[in-house]
Image 1 (cartoon, helix red, strand yellow):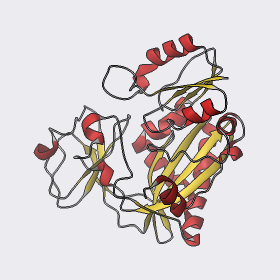
Image 2 (cartoon, rainbow, N blue to C red; image 1 turned 30 degrees about the vertical axis):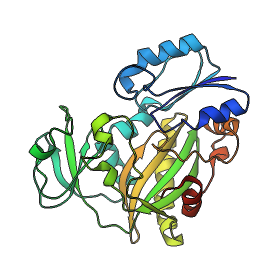
Image 3 (cartoon, helix red, strand yellow; image 1 turned 135 degrees about the horizontal axis):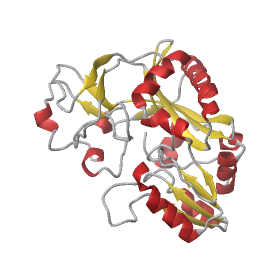
Length: 308
């Protein structure tokens, strides 16, 4: 079998040697193979489709939200509607409130590139597109960051910092009208990777969100409230179609779960720990998402991967 993987750097890299060890041909395209700056984006459709037409694979797994490929070959990817859950961040934030999530309050609903200086931490988020979230420390002026960050003409909104008990992530797979929760995990000390002086905003290639994080398993009570909210959300978004891995991010404070984001793609710095073979992973993505389920403890990630 020949498979082409299309993804952001550090998301599906681990799968190439796994497929090869099982006797298959695997090719990964992230944009770094080109002599051009930056990772693949939704605007790279012509380039990706030309690669596919040359390689003539049996399968293509396209993990770039917004990049909807048209091909005679078997493509597992987002629909436009499932892509928009990540790309239209502001719209998704408010849709999530219909499914039990709480809202992190806004400091500014219609920010411009001249971000207001405030005496508190602020998170600057693009309303639409694939730009990253920025964390600005208190009393940071735009003049201090304008040489490090490239702002484009896009609407932003600004959220305040939330005093939470634990940040939580719910990883899932959606395939052919069904979904399974792959795993869930909690953490504290999050957000340092979003600081404007982080390398992710300088070269726009490698985003290491693990910076400053301590992973922890959710307590029984935290797991109950978080998975309840995520399940209600997944019951909705599975109707939007697509065959993809994704992640729901939220903050747990007492019995409340606050919405952070959805990524309609595998996480950056993917831990690469699977419940079975590479072909099991592919089958989970194509038809049976239950094959993707693989709950892993925080201590296992620390011992096996050396971080968290």
